[in-house]
Length: 77
Image (cartoon, rainbow, N blue to C red; front, side, top):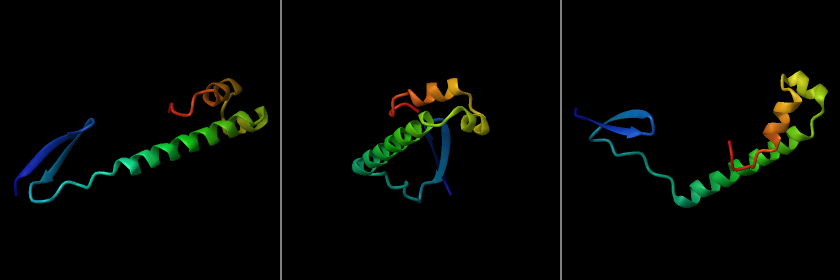
């Protein structure tokens, strides 16, 4: 069996030549997944901004870190 090497980001992928490559996601599906991730980040950051110091302390987060995270735009990780 002959193998073919490909670079996928930082990982080296080895696959047999007789196996087809995995199907690519459609542009619409990738867009939908991106929009969902952005919405989830926005919700999470809004919730984080609304927590009081006692709850943040219980979570192991200081109020300064919570403020920094909650003021990030939704498109940034």
